[in-house]
Length: 406
Image (cartoon, rainbow, N blue to C red; front, side, top):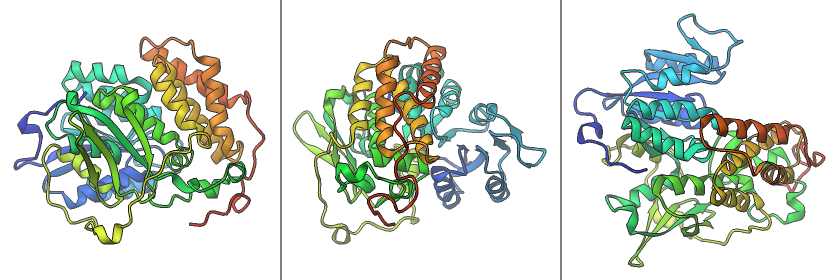
């Protein structure tokens, strides 16, 4: 799926390039706006959208003065000039003045905006990994049809892209994605069964939104990243591996066919991959992130994944290998299960159990087009929401689990 953009689409020359930030009030969105504020001579914020945080969106609009402001969810006070409803994502992504779309929408809701932006020939700086997981083939077709391109924002995939440089995918022998291990890296299986919401949201190295933080705790996030890497770089699943790296300093390894291995290293800040997604394959000077100190970062350690204790990773990778509707079912079941967990209606261990139940029950669903994939998505959510195989909530209140402390 990687394509090299024309030279005049790489770094702004004179006139700043227009940027749309979808999901501007979330973790990645606010991070992107910090980067864009520093790089205002090279990039111009032309569109902002949020799900429901109207007060923060209004503050952002006042600061960046975008031409287009969208709010997905109605039912709250907002200025009359704003565009309201789910269609605002597509409108913002296809605005004529926009060159780059930062898709930081959480979940499968970001799919249609990605497809529309690619068909319109935009660069999509993709933080919404669920887009590729749910409909990787459709995304690739949209990019081919419209001349758009995807540049990943996830730190692991940005690392791979930077390690590859101008080398073709045929030079890759193996990809190794690193995982922090999340807040439960050292927990026993018995402790995991009592894990609370507060425990799961206490990530040791990254500060992220609630959904992705829980995904990091279950390692479902790493499964999504493996599927995303498969589509982004065209590498078979049997040559994509995951290793636990608690310091979150090495973001990925690329092993080449001659046995050489390159790694991308940096402080754990999403501002770095956001900036690179804007400028790839070039770079802009930036002083917004603490400089890397190898002595302070030491020691760097690596561990094997405890696959039996974190089954969501294996379930997701198996769904990726199965193809068809399975990745969409995995993603949707996970999203619904995480939502129930955060509402205190499902145990932490129940997340993986719900995913497995959905995959077992719905494995034969069709996947030939967008409609079929969205139907599979809806079926998986309904399966989990209706409680098939759902265990009784355990330890949903802070302080009742294994005792993690932020």
